[in-house]
Image 1 (cartoon, rainbow, N blue to C red):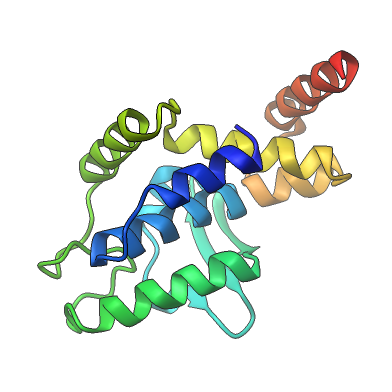
Image 2 (spheres, rainbow, N blue to C red; image 1 turned 180 degrees about the horizontal axis):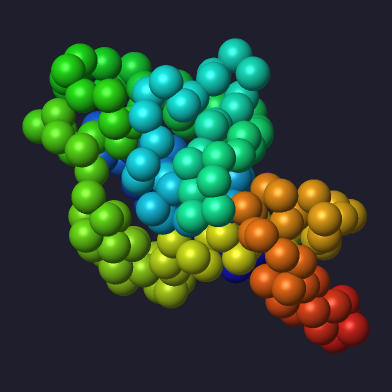
Length: 170
């Protein structure tokens, strides 16, 4: 998936509460390289809007990742809508009724998004997109390992090899 595909996914959402939330989810996944479980475990206190940072508690421990200005704008729009839904839940991602968003709801959102756009997409594909864009734009593999929360370079090297294949084709 390239940046044009990501933009097409984002355009598929409206301006409803769910639309704002889902745009922010897509952008957070692709901009930060998060696993779905990491995304859904985020609390309001894990978001530092002024520094554009997320504190992520992942499979391999805690790490901090940065998000860009497009994600920041989308996240801010979602947070403003979220404030009107329920102030009693500390989970970042909520449904309209104020309850914590579940992974099954996110999976359903991705199925509908794939059908609507014709782009087969799932959360891990956005993590892969983050990694390949990082490498294609000159990021190094050691920093990518830290950003993805990999304990060894072996997993990260899979992305490096895939990008190497793309570069050879181009």
